[in-house]
Length: 96
Length: 193
Image (cartoon, rainbow over all chains, first blue to last red; front, side, top):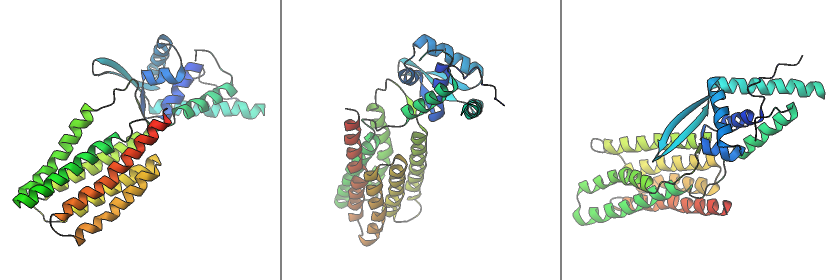
């Protein structure tokens, strides 16, 4: 039986962001931008969606005079990510 | 990267690629905290030694309390102008180790007003353990090696008496912090060329 894939994570950029944040304690917007190669606008939209779902925590602050957006995965996000990977495995097992 | 839907195989490949990309690599100025605190401690050790020799006053030891203040100040002044920020789990663990050991070292320093112990030996032991653990966590052999030497150096203050203990402390701090700090910076610069 195929497990349903979480539609929120089944998109390239959102999955990329979640994969980055699951490997580190926290990262800022610029780090995510560098690793994903996506545009500022696109990342902002996806961060908002992930944050609204409670998968990530976004904190806006200042570093000197510049603003800094720091993102962190939440326990809900970690659980959803693990569930997503498990679901993918069922698809791949069926195919092979 | 865009907002497109992936197939299952592509999803797994993306997860694996992103996790690999985020793995910690040596940064160009990673040895900076070791160098700042190492050099300040060695300089203060020399000052304390000279003051103890010339004035014979116990109050010369008050100079040790300037180390965390000067260290914090220089860390702030020389802080890296980061364009991007990431904190790995390894960074978090190393921060916890040094914050804990740092707090213990400061509390012990205050206890010296009331209790008489071999503080030089105790400090070398604590700082040596913190350095060795840091080396083991970031998997950097020169720090592990120098940290072990520093930890073992804690027996020497029991052999040497008087002001010479202060010089021994400075020497072992140089071995534990300054030498591996420079090696770490060199390797970091090479890795980022």
